[in-house]
Amino acid sequence: MDKIVIENLYKIYNEDKESEFTALKDINLKVASNELMILRGVSGSGKSTLLSLMAAFSKPSRGKILIDGENISKLPDFFASEFRNRDIGFIFQSFNLIEGLSLFENVKIPLVLHPYSTQEIEEKVHHALNLANIMHKAEQNVADLSGGEKQRCAIARALVNNPSIILADEPTANLDKANSLKFIEVLEKFKNMKKCVVVATHDTLFNDLSFVDNYVNISDGEILA
Amino acid sequence: MKNEDIGIKILTKMLMKLVYKIYFLLRKTLYASLKIANKQYKQLRSDLNKNFVDFSVRLLIKEKKDYIFSFFIFTFIVFIITSVLFVSNSVKRDLLLSVQNGGEVIVKNSKSGRYTSATDEEMDDILQINGVEDVIGMVDGYYNFTQDRRVFHIVADNDLNDTSMIISDDVARELKSFKYEKEFNFLVKDKAITLNIDKILESTILTNNTIFVNSDNAREILEMDEDEYSFLNVIVPNKDEIENIALKIARLYPNLIAIPDYELKSDYEHLYYYKGGIFMILYIVSLVSFFILLKNQISAIYGSRRKEIAILRSMGFSIRDIILVKFIQNSIVAFAAYFAAIFLSYLYVFVLDAPLLRNIFLGSGVEDIVFTPVVDIKMLFLVFVFTVVPYLAAILIPSWRLAIEDVSEAMK
Ligand SMILES: Nc1ncnc2c1ncn2[C@@H]1O[C@H](COP(=O)(O)OP(=O)(O)OP(=O)(O)O)[C@@H](O)[C@H]1O
Ligand SMILES: [Mg+2]
Image (cartoon, rainbow over all chains, first blue to last red):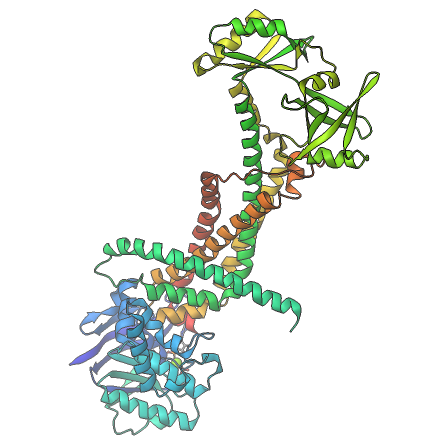
């Protein structure tokens, strides 16, 4: 069954202005519910733009993004936010952790929108921290973590709400090779958890992975056949 | 570590404790009200829950540097306003009380447009008027203490014997500086009246320059005859008759001035408006501080937190959630500052007796005034409405403008 269906999607920045720029052109794409897809393309090709549309961070200029059959690009803010919270785990290139809070507190953030008990929160956060292999640093301020540890924190945070979709934008761009390889192991875990995963990257380490279902190449905002 | 650093640390800790205390109190009420509010949003995710409020507070603590300055300015503003109001309410109350203790109609005699004494004869005639229960002749007046060009208020008190007097501690200090510690000589025409200092009273607004003496002594000091009174307190039990009786007295003796007590009261009510100039300055100071406060808080919201808000949005916080986070945080700051300021100004006015401010109200001659504690809840509520409410309202706009930003743009 298709989890994500994208139809005739356009993203045009500064539309009708002199600086108008078409970042995505007539994108058509399907991602199955337990598919792992790698989105490849050079810098500026539109990978981040596409991911942020899938996560409902911004709205497309034209076209549809159907998640479980629902067009999320039309959702009003409250429902779009609820969708992000429930269905999306996003892993950013620069991790986007909140400095000054501990690892535990960062991972907890998606949960505070729900009336869980303290114990439930603790269980969920610990589960996610264990999955991401970072349990031992739970109480540490994220500002003091290494790059690889920060990413594992970001992974735990993306998993904590048990979302059906995981989106990762250049997840290894700020990591050394050892940590990048560890991330690829985590990807395999996601696959085994039957998540729908889309990773945008230009890192060659992702080439020719046996557990990847689909490689999609994007160039100048268009998908190459 | 330097001493100042330790001081600041302790202060911050105490503040945070206060904020926590108030927060836990507020939380209870908030949850109670949220339960009602949430019923309307049943179909939506319940975004107002304990975890959400706790998280907002956690962020507030993390960002306390952004808020501490606002907290102090806010406290300062509310402190100034409530201190002025505390003092003026206390003064007013004491003055009004003095009117209440007198007669319903106060009668003074006049000649050529100046006040003079009333006599036994006039007193008897007023007593004949229907509706008058009693007429009490009062002896009071002013004695010139020529050595220091001060004026003492002489009040007759018949419980005293003819060798003693009771003075306020303000008067006591004055006399002491001229070496009068046990007794004092009142100089009248060609003799001196020597009275012992029997007792020293705490000064209030009403008694700060008062000397109580036996009425015979008072007459001598004030050079009044046996049958003379400074004014008459006319006791009228029926309120509806007060005005009528005042008219009757004036008709009986056109030179008598009869003033109903409610007219005196309204005179006192307005007593402090003529000093408006100084209060205007105080109010302008607090108004200007208020704008500094808003500017500071708005730039704090706009400043470093833009990306943080985008991060929260990316994890599913809605626009409303973001505004709510900011609202909760600023409410805690505003409430804490409001209560801290009221507590401080209560201490300042009623325990320390308002140094500096009392000089503005009562002139610089007054030293040891005691303000009777009067807490007017309605007034405190008004202060709340004019400080906390506009502050929170002003905070909503920048919070909203940040919240509606495109998530992927703000993240860059
Ligand atoms: N807000 C914007 N206004 C105008 N142009 C934009 C805006 N955001 C992105 N673009 C342009 O859209 C194109 C695609 O950007 P995008 O960030 O999706 O690329 P990318 O494939 O993720 O690149 P990279 O590998 O460097 O992250 C780029 O040419 C970029 O300059
Ligand atoms: Mg990118």
